[in-house]
Length: 113
Length: 111
Image 1 (cartoon, rainbow over the protein chains, first blue to last red):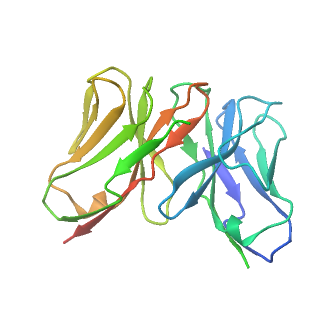
Image 2 (cartoon, helix red, strand yellow):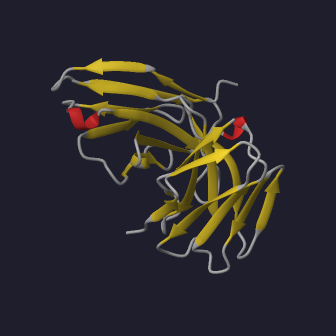
């Protein structure tokens, strides 16, 4: 089982460029999440999808959009990258909401110059 | 909104010593989860606590959920170099589908 797969692992962008981070899970999970991790800030939720066909904002959604393409895939798009979006991005999934544990992907290191 | 705070932010520990990291929530939690992230890695689930006053052990790690379900602690005995990493606690928001993570405690072990 691959679990949660993220691509790419590393990306360098110039300010104003756009890109999409891809995430796929093969565990038949309903809920999927995008977090960003900055030093000393822990993990902050950007967007999540409770189930296929639904998405909702997290703590820091500004500058991002998401698409729940199907049950397996949840992508994160930066329309016009800014240096403040330099971060490590993690995708995660879990069976359902509530008390279920999260499974994380290996992360994407993004630098915006 | 709900806040989850962890202290200390950094913990330097001599190999073989014990230490404790603490997690405090501004609101009562239905449950609390702990994750470990090795340097350069991704967070990995360790444990979940649900009941008031609950204590769970995993080898040298002891997790406790406070009586008021607003705080939690992780105690590691006889620290080893394999314990290096950042430990996060996380609690569900009121709606249930979102987890709020604490800022983490980064553990460094001196051999």
